[in-house]
Length: 251
Ligand SMILES: Nc1ncnc2c1ncn2[C@@H]1O[C@H](COP(=O)(O)OP(=O)(O)OP(=O)(O)O)[C@@H](O)[C@H]1O
Ligand SMILES: [Mg+2]
Image 1 (cartoon, helix red, strand yellow):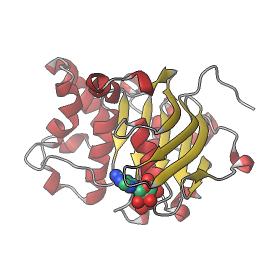
Image 2 (image 1 turned 180 degrees about the vertical axis):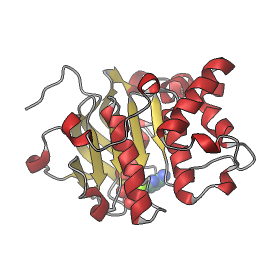
Image 3 (image 1 turned 90 degrees about the vertical axis):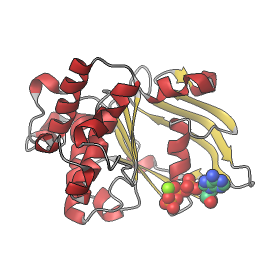
Image 4 (image 1 turned 45 degrees about the vertical axis):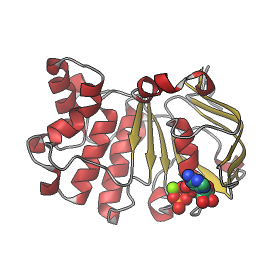
């Protein structure tokens, strides 16, 4: 059993009931270790997006506590939410790129918002684009890229701030199997450099190709995952075939 001093994510008896009375999460208790990669599965309506929204502070728990990197999210006031979110990489199914801006500008956005210097922005944006294999497209517009490439731009934008935690909601939802695999491989490489990764997906065929812990939700409850509760931490042996990350610019 691998133990870490402090989990990256800790849900303790968390409930989420929406204003309409819908119980989206029921008594959720869950730890995700620092550096772990986890898939969140479950049918439509099971509560996957709700769980991620609590982590992103898009929603708040009705009861229970939620800690990220040791910090209790209940203590983060509305004014501090943007700063909190900047420590988090968030990837959506719909990559939400700005059509009238270049790929470079799209990826730079979180850094511009954070008042990063132009020199640092240029360095970090290029490193992030390099990591998703899209450096040659920095001056292109989103419309000139394929769906899979656009999704990778979304991924570059999510990691450009070097977050310790990356969360993704159905990041391969619009992609064909080959492109889905490619995007998942990129996530795995981020885990390989120490990022904690939590991905919600109902693409079971894809998930089964990865030796990664699965957390299964059903009707807002966590199903027993006792057979797979060992955290799957970075194992260099599994990355021998992977392309190396740019050494100086890895996260
Ligand atoms: N803003 C909201 N207001 C009210 N009810 C909501 C809201 N968002 C989600 N729900 C309800 O909460 C439950 C969980 O929804 P959630 O979006 O978390 O499911 P999901 O597992 O992500 O589903 P999917 O696979 O379809 O994306 C559902 O019953 C849903 O109808
Ligand atoms: Mg969802």
